[in-house]
Structures are given as C-alpha cells and as structure tokens.
Image (cartoon, helix red, strand yellow):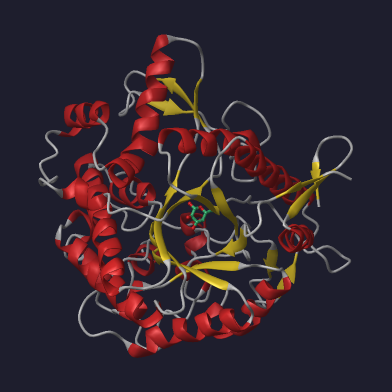
Length: 459
Ligand code: FCB
C-alpha cells in the first residue's frame, strides 16, 4: 500500500477552545465573558444553550490529556480564557485562573505533548465590552497587558503561541452581522474598527513576547478560503476580488505586508466612510513579524454578484453544489491544497500550520457502543492528503491540527453540530472515541496517510 509520508518533524495535533469545552464559568474567580452574556440573551443561541458546563474540561482535563496522548497527538491547541486570568480584563492577575493553565501545560508536557496556546479565542471579558470592546482602541492595551501576564507565567514551557483566532469572525460576525458575541448588528464601521484593533493588538503582543525573551514561536490564526466565481461573467469575477479582499486579504495583508490592500481601502471607504481609526504607523506595528501563520480551513467560497446586497455579492450556500456537511458546508479537500499553495505564493517565507480543519456530522452512539463516523474518516483522510499535495507543490506546511478533540459548544449553534473525533454524551459527559479517532491515531503515530489502490486516502 502506497502511503503519503509527511516531512520529519511535522506536528500533528487536535484543537479546542476555552469557552467551548471548559465549563466552570463561575469557578476560582473567573469573570464574565461576552459569550456568557450573549448566551443569556434570549434568541441568540440555538436551544438557549450556554457554555456553563460544556464538556466540563475544567474538572476533567487530566483524563482529556490522557485521551490526547492515546491519540498520539504531538501537540494540543487550546485557548486561555482571558476572563479567568483577568476577570475584568485588566488589573491584578487572578492566580487561581492562571494555575489551571499551569497544571494543564505541565500535564501535557508529562505526556510529551507540546502546548499550542491561543490567547483570544473570542471570549473577551464582558467588562471590556462594556467599554466598547474591540471597537475601542484602549482594548489594544488591555490585550497586550493580558498577553504579557500569560507569557510571563507559561512562556518558559509553551513553544507555540497564537494571538487571535479568526479575527474576521470576531469583527464581522460579532460587530456587524450580530450572530456572534457581542451581537452588535448593522454597523460596518464598528466591524472595521474592531478588525483594526485586533490587528494592532496582535502586533503589540508579538512585540511584548519578543521583549520578554521566550524561546518559542508566535503567530496568528486566520480563517481563510479559496474563492471561485459562480459564472464566467465579469461581475462574478469582480465579486471574487471583493470577497477575497473582505475575507482573506483584509487580514493577511496588514499582518504579513504591513498595509491594508488598496482596492479594499477604496471599497470600504465608499461603503463606510474614511477609515480614520487607522493611525500612522499602526499597520507597520501589526506586521510585527510572525514565526508562522495558522490557517483554519473548512470550505471554499463560491460567490455571485448580487446588486442590492450590502456587499454587492453573495456567497452561495453549499458552494458549488457537491457534498455538504450537516451544517451545509461544502466538502472540498482540493480547496485546502489551493489555499496553501496560494499562501505560499502570495505571502512567501511564512511557515504555515493548519490550525483547524474538521467536519460536523450527526454522530450517534450505536448499539454496539461505538460511534461510527465514516464520513469524518474520509473527510480527514482526504484533507490530510490535500495538505500533502500542497507540501509537494512547495508549501512550507509545518503541522496540522484537527478540529476538534471532542464534541463541544459550537457557538450560536449550541451542541447540535458534533465536530469531535471523540464523542461526548452531554448527559453524562462520558467521552467515547469515534472511528475517526482510530484514523487520527494511525496517521499521527506513523506521520503518514495510506493510499488505497483505488487512489483514495486511507489510514
Ligand atoms: C471555527 C472556530 C472554532 C470552531 C470551528 C467549527 O470558526 O474557530 O472555534 O467553532 O469553527
């Protein structure tokens, strides 16, 4: 059987985030976050779900680390809850909150698993939101302060840091579409302002990390997607440029090139007025020089020009009409190859990690006590193979994190979408590895994906 071997030293891991798994929202001095508040706002989250208990990882982290070890993970990507560390977003650090992450890091290291730590996976302290949240320039200082506290406590043992997770979601879903916390709708300027402060705070935190003199590496994670037009028309091609600018380049360019893309500055200025919140020198600071770029890939975007739509185009639900996940997301492994090659070409010299990729399915516990998820098994194999093709084509891909270790709180969609390779029974909180967990173990431990004779990828 032929197999696709990954480069020596390639990092394999699984990913989660604090609010989605920890629970224990009122323990050990934790403050309120925007997601606690959003979940309590009627009508915002499916079934009125909250992260109050989630997977109860806060009390079960030791067993969860054992699971990671059993899956052969070389690294674990988790996030720190800002409101555990600084309950009101600023001021004296809450030692008990930091202690939790200290214990988690040590437990990982005892199992030979390298921690990859995200500082902001969307759970801004509510007290900072009360002061304007990411639309307020002062939040840049607050994030830098928070980052400095966490680096100082964990920086001797954490080898890989991620400042922000998916700032596009924070800015545009949180401050414009209102479908994520803090749930602000209708204000494009607020979203652009939020995005800018996320960029600037990223740069400041990178600088602080370097100044503290730690041995590890630091980057940022963006949600990125390859684009294609719905038709060959000039209007659809123009829609691709704008959507790529909005989704990809507005975040890539400031961080990696030190400037916003000119065409999108024109576009957003026409829609939202002058971008006067960008002060001289800001974008140079945002481009602080990262060690790697984290890429979250779920699906491509197929766009169609739509006069009258607030952006001038729309993204087609279900993409180009192929197979979709239970969330209606198109299954398109080739999009990952295309995306990684494009990044290597347009933003050369930056090592890449896939920091999230995975699939939501309607998983069920079967009569035999197992969870059979053949669609996820195929999905992951084919995406691993797609990443391998990108490496062969020259992309400097250093690692791959599967989303997610276990089923968890999927934001505004509550607990219905199941993304884990480990099933969670939300009544008992029991963890049951799915069939895909066996695939992950095989790939992680062999650093290779097998190809069956028919040409498909297998374990
Ligand atoms: C990403 C998020 C992650 C998870 C996956 C499905 O956008 O970063 O927390 O919800 O989607």
